Length: 327
Image (cartoon, rainbow, N blue to C red; front, side):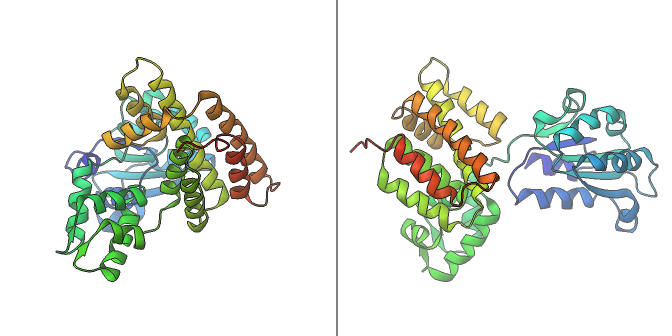
């Protein structure tokens, strides 16, 4: 990852903005940043703040003070809230003075332009599929795994390296010398992100049996109702944009760029093609209706007015696009 190499270099940038992303990379980013300060001085020249508005005074004080003994100070700000991001623009000179390396974990869209244009921005944690498969093969410890099995593993874990690492350990414990796609499907459950994506695709294709499987996978994922509903909403919005692209002369690259910018997700060629194909099978007004109804379910779930969000979601699907199935 180029951003990690930059942080670890002799001349790191003054400011980095990391979009929300894979949990596998974030600890590595923090470790790399921490290593910039000698252990003796970390209590003074390294600071980590939550991104709430109450952290502004502490951030200002830390950046505005002199280094205790290191060559540089290092600041980490986690989950920058929108109000906090607005205040950060007021102290932009402190971030850009060159006396500190600051790393903000934030949606880049929240960061003021005077900071964003000077920052090293990481909007996607995407890794080329060939590199991911190579990483998987290295971790299977000399055993074999074919491309189809590796692809299935990536899909079921939502491309999350932390999950893949854990599931590879399970595969090594429960499979033979050659790991097949059947092994992956038997051992590796779909994470909530992957199950939500499978649900949206099944809905678009009107495949009720696959919808039922995806709903079961979502239930077994153990994710909170609000997380599941958010994942489904993200998938439906992505499908809506694919529908708009497929109905116009806009190139596929526009959809890929939108996903990177708005959802911080890279679509490889296979996923992009599958998404556009799925969009052909659903009507625009059906998507709009589902998103409207889903918003109502999310509201009632957050207010405690719905005891079972998955049941409400299943009812929503049955009343909209699943009334007519395609063979």
